[in-house]
Image (tube, rainbow, N blue to C red; front, side):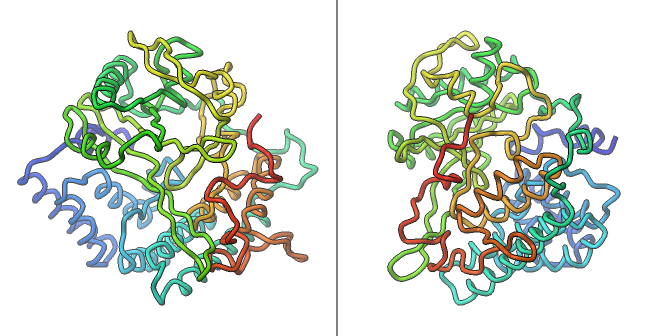
Length: 438
């Protein structure tokens, strides 16, 4: 009921649209007052107001909604427990948000509170890299992650001899889709996106849910979230691409994401930021994700700030969809199997963080925070939980412990631990040295 009311008052198209100067001033003032009343933290109120004045309503209002649902748990509107609610904040703002969460977080589930503390400390670790405060924030991340890991091992993971009948089941009737997604609107947005990119000399290709719709149903999936396009990073002039995406109606670039790795170097840990994703909104309201793909060793990977997915190497070939012939992986069925497993059977309530066989870890603080949070969510899937623990061990995130079974490694991301080894590749870490797929 509450979510439906909010969507009627502030539809997604309004939040992601462009707004005039008067609208930005009025809404930013209202958001400042609301945030200040809820958090009692002027710096958090200024941050929300600043976002909206910059016409970043999507982030500003999402931040305000997060404060509301953490202050008033009975109004919890969260749909994604892995939502990165603190992106782009300064160290001072992250510290104020942490104080706010600790003041009011006792009213929410321990698993949720510990997970959000991990996200905050991971974000602060990245912001503090290269400063004298880095060790302090890295220690806080290790402590937060260790508490969540202990919670997962004690409360979330079932006994290995538990039978499927004893485990809670996911709702098979829940449809995973974004409000307002229209297959006809998506077809129009796809045609415009292809015209824009191809006209500028890029070679976009369809992937993930868009590819699945083309192969399995010959059309856009009615229950999809958005349009998924890919570009090979080595073929793309990223400066030209950003200029094109930021100045090309009928599109608006909502944000660009990078994946941050911390690796070992001759003089200690080094930071590596890799552009991975551009998120656009079409004038018709459809969101388009453009994933940069990187060829590395024996795989091709793409991802977001939080995740990384690997596929076998592929070439491109045209495929019919929505009255056009976009490029797509030539080995489409293999690509879909690696992404979805049994893709021929429709899956409801699909979660890209829990249900993708080719999700792997990368050597970064956000990957640590997300992997521990995912582990706590896998209470009904012991095999997946065991596989994730193996990946975390291979990445150097955890080490064996005689009392608890596992513990967060103390030396990660400091230039001396396994996760920051000088010989560690920039690419994905796969448990047991094998491909994560089916």
